[in-house]
Amino acid sequence: MAVLERLRSDHASALLAFERENRGYFAASVPDRGDAYFEEFDDRHRELIEAQEAGEIHFHVLVGEGGEIVGRINLVDVDAGAGSAELGFRLAERATGRGFATRGVREVCRLAVEEYGLSRLTAFVAMGNAASSAVLARTGFGAVGGVTLDDGEPGTAYELELGDLAGLVP
Image 1 (cartoon, one colour):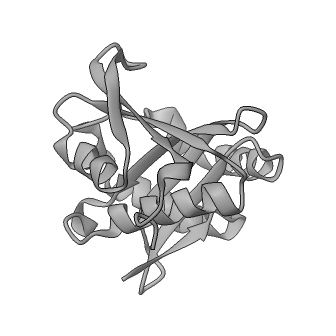
Image 2 (image 1 turned 90 degrees about the vertical axis):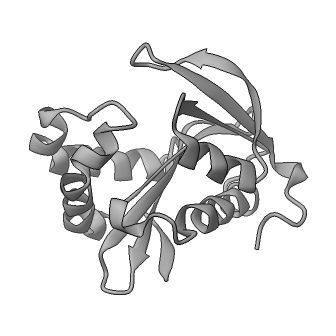
């Protein structure tokens, strides 16, 4: 079982371990973060906490029974005026196939409505990333069209109107 927690400063070392341990696994489906991400991790983590406190982002981690981080589920590009944000998530390779991502995304959708006042989420998935597409489908997101991702690769855009969550959020 994993518990969803809002990202805190004391998650830094466990989050860094999660990113390092899964770097190769993630790079198979999303662009690699690059060496600078790891070299500047402490400064970046501090900046994320500050941005979160300002309401610009909402970052979450899935924490396993031993205190290790097994996933992250983030809301970025938060536009409080429009009630929208972009959802992103990643799960440790050893934690896949156990429903953690689906449960975590559902919980973040609930928080988006109840805590962050959002009404619409978008997500973008690389072509061929069937696991992420399946999580989005199970949590109520609908594909709305093709996109070119930041790395130039083709992908699919998904949207979820959070008023449509009846029966989807635990």
